[in-house]
Length: 297
Image 1 (cartoon, one colour):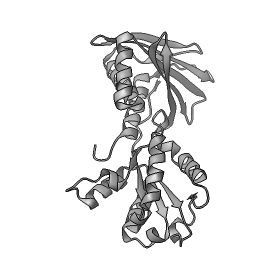
Image 2 (cartoon, one colour):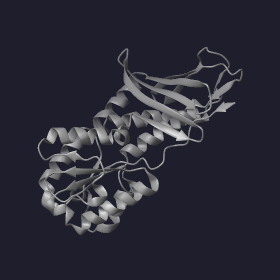
Image 3 (cartoon, helix red, strand yellow):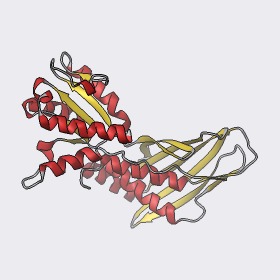
Image 4 (cartoon, rainbow, N blue to C red):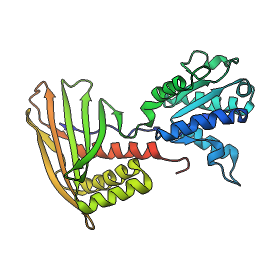
């Protein structure tokens, strides 16, 4: 039996799209800056549109690829044809795909549109910080590039990334937990990556120049490509003991020690399982790329 990874997640795109009336620009700027400081990717028309851009085309593209639509509700916005059009587009995606978070943001007393009245909303009228916490909680599942779930067929895989240093050298570790709906066992697997001095230097420069998430993607994407072309990357499990493999991959002077491990937990079915850990990493990297992706890319 080959226990393959699940299908890459589709439709998990950020940035967060904010629908608002320009009369509420001061509040929106404050909210957007708070989200950016928390490493969220925000699409705001006044930040993103350039001279000569098609307003309709750019907004349509942003809504189509966003994972979250924040709807600013105020006296001005509920009367705005533009806001209504953006809300309708987001709600159509929500109904059709179930892949976008639509979160009303109440900033003053107003007539909330009937199609938003049954939704949990973030209330900023009395307490900005309380409203911000609601936004963070509601969008966490589509804005965290370091952990997620992939689903496909009868399997789902939960995974997360952590990082640090080992002897002052960069270390990345991706942990996967895979479960099949009908199988009486779970597969726990890990990929640990440790760079040499040069790799750690390059990683540090990437963090400084492009940010931590892009640095993680760069390293993991490189390792994913190497594992794809390596031989015998599938891990065979026939009992409860941990199995795995070790690799050394080079990129110029940068060298990476890679260890993959997997073990089975639960009921012994008497059948061997092949763990496609290379596919796990491909899916994780694809998800991370989509989370930090900008509209039009």
